[in-house]
Length: 79
View 1: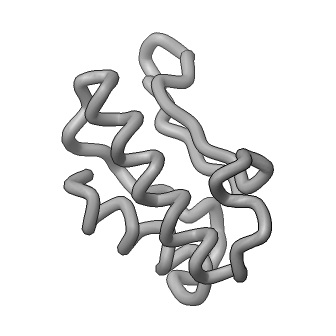
View 2: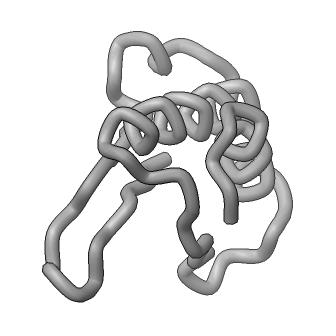
């Protein structure tokens, strides 16, 4: 699971999270995605971002994709 917030106009990544990070490794898939969403939201807030657009990249909105989005929303990031 990788997720990032990208500024399309400036062509740069503002915040990112990956499943290989120490606090996410070893968790079950859904829990890992939920925690990744929360971590991404925390990093987004630190970068001054409160709202974003959620692009699923063609993936259906279920399972880990849904858990990531819900984790980010629960941590205060608006889609």
